[in-house]
Length: 85
Image (cartoon, rainbow, N blue to C red; front, top):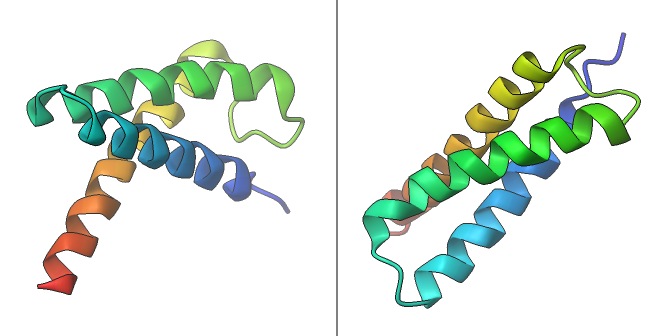
């Protein structure tokens, strides 16, 4: 049984990369989690239509999976910061 976990991980990594790009720009850091959530939602819907093993069967669920993956990207970033101190 395959749950499409690689596709969810891919969304998280892409959102993390986007967050790092935003962090390097002049964007206020408070908007980075929002941007990751929106990017994750968009990538989730794209993943639904592009990836055959995506773990959602409708647009709303795909967007929700994407949002959670996008927010996970900011959590990964914060966990790395905390452990590196």
